[in-house]
Length: 438
Image 1 (cartoon, rainbow, N blue to C red):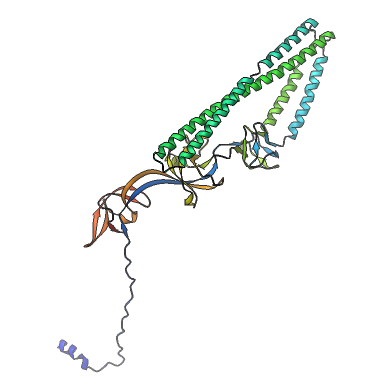
Image 2: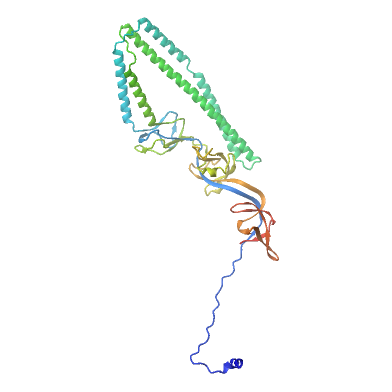
């Protein structure tokens, strides 16, 4: 009965107020995005350590005042050539200079007072004459012993050592500039070792020259001392001839001389003097500036050669080794890329110089330019590789989805060296296989 009523429902009268059922509208769906595919390629996979450094002079020395104060004079500017011993800058030392002038007057007064005082130990004319003769003899001996020849010989050795460094530098630059030559890495390493040896010989020659120069200066100081002794002997003779008492060096004289020495030491601490010949690379002070003791304010050195200098964390620097060969280029200028070599690393975390230095030949690059350094830490040559996005993992399984004529198929793979953009495929695939990415 129910079934018949339902079938006959079309003949039933319409119910007052009944409405037609709404028509559904299908919701459009976005088209499926095809997964990317990757082709198995053959090439090199490299784990590269990258950092940036500044293109700066290799040989430089930073100078600082030993005391703090206000700058009085700055005698040099960036780019000026200087010679050893030249005054570069000093602090406000007007008070010290006034104290020095006063101390010198006090010394003269003390000497005059000592000379005018009576002394019961009067030299005889004969003794004074002998003393003067001995003083003259000592002066002549000091002049004859002036070490001219040792200084000249040391200077010739220094010039020869410098020439050896220049030759070694040219040989090294030539080796670095031909990375395509057979055995280039070995040639660079050999040239670098010869350069280091030549530089060490140069340092030794410099030390010998400085030692000879110091001996020469000491000999000159001895001559001046002997000249003073002659003057003193002459004064003693005059006093003896006048039958006057000769005053010995009194406590007042010694005190006045000590005061002069102390003031001169303070003046030296307030002055910056060039330690060697070179060029001013940087000046960070001007007159009236306030400076702190032992804070570098002037840098001198040689403008060439330059190298990429960076201050890396010591743990990062440990990834590198001296002699490691990589590629350097000016930031955002890949056409400037050249081969470069790690020349220096910090010896320890406590090393005063924490810079990492890389040698390269970039003759047209301006000082201060930022340099990108790429050093390969590990390399797999001529291997199969895929981008990381093509590799899949599930639990302990590593696999890829291989595209085949019969459809996608999972294939287990063994991985080798992995970097940010390439993963070495040791087994499971062959060159040219197409893999479906995630």
